[in-house]
Each structure stands twice: as C-alpha cells, then as structure tokens.
Image (cartoon, rainbow, N blue to C red; front, side, top):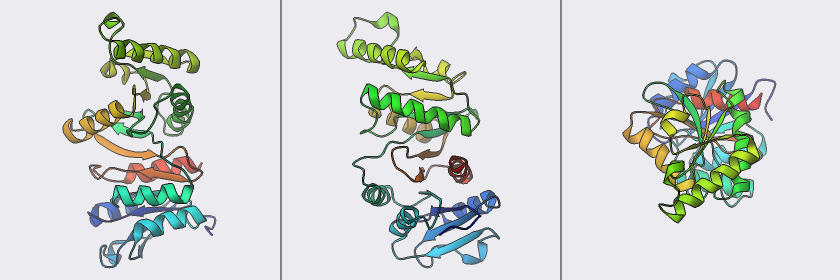
Length: 254
C-alpha cells in the first residue's frame, strides 16, 4: 500500500525519454512510477523521485496497481489507448469512460473540454454530471469555473435545420439547469472567459480535441476519467510532455 508520500503511475510504450523527463520534472511532491516493457526505458535516467517498473504487460500492471491501491493515481502516458482503456473499464466495472480534457491553444490559453469520446455525454443528465465534475477540476487546476454550453449554430440559425434547433434547445436547457452560459457555436469567444467548455455531443467534442491538437498547433495535457472511483488521467501522444498530466493527477488527489 502507498505510504505517506503519494505515488502516481505513468505508462511508457513510445518516447521513453519524454515520459521519464516529464516524471523527473513533476516528481518531488510525489513519487512517479514509470510502467514499461523490459528494456524500453533507461533506468539510469530516473531521478530521485522516479522509479522504472518493468513488466511484460505494462498497461495491465498499471491498471491493476491503480485498482488495488498500490498507486494513488495513474496517467496513461504513451501506452496504447485501446488495450489500456479496455483494461481500465474491466477493472472499474464500467461499460464506458467519461473524460474531461485539459487543452491548450497555440496561444497558450488553457481550458477544459467535454465530452471528448464518441460514446460520452449524449444526454442532458450526462452533461449536467460532467459539468458538476468539470467545475471541481477547474477549481483544483486554477481555471475559471464559468461554463460554456456549445450548440450547433447561432440563435439566428433557428429554423434552418431540425438538428440545429434541437441542439440549441438542449443547450438552453442544460444551461438553465446548471447555471452555465449558452455560447451558441462561438467557441472562439467562449474560451476567453470560460474554463469549462461543453461540446454538443461526443462526436463534435472529439473533433474539437483532434482539430486543436493535431491540426491547430495546440496541446492536450490529459483527460481525467470522471465516472470511476480511482484517479486515472488519459493522455495524448501528441502532448509536448506529460508534466501537466502528472500534476493534474496530483491535484485531483488533494
């Protein structure tokens, strides 16, 4: 079991130098355990608060140690998404995972975005729950708690298509139920004052995330899974480093 010092695990499949460097930078207030297959990472590069744990199936070892309490939190790092998240769902007894992503624009503006998975946040109730949990994360990470609800168009577009109308009606309802602001489709304005952005659905949220990180020069710093009992931060291999993902996991332990 973990001692008085918190222990956060992070996985390595690719770019071991980047992951270990991030662990060395973040470690100190907590210990970092890097899970990887034998021979992937150079043990000599691990700093005082970093340990390399070699295992033939590092994603399963990371999830098992998180579920059993051997580590206090986990970050996916560069482990494969499908096998790692599949193991996490099985260990936590859930059919799907709900995530809230910490993103950064090319100009350095950070904000939270959800839903970001195609099977996430499709109902009003699910969006309301994501907003509740997202505001808690925003507070812990020093972001504005003001929340923006996006929809499929501007209010002036009502009547142009039934799906757009339904999107705006749902956004208005979620905004009223949660005290958030319906920002229509204007995400570029919303991030100036809102720390939490709610996409119309999981498909559009995933597209926003991928467009920002893979085409727009922005960065994804990690996405905490919010519908499980343990702290797990999903991460993108497009991240410049994993320091923020580790710090995000640590902040959720407080």
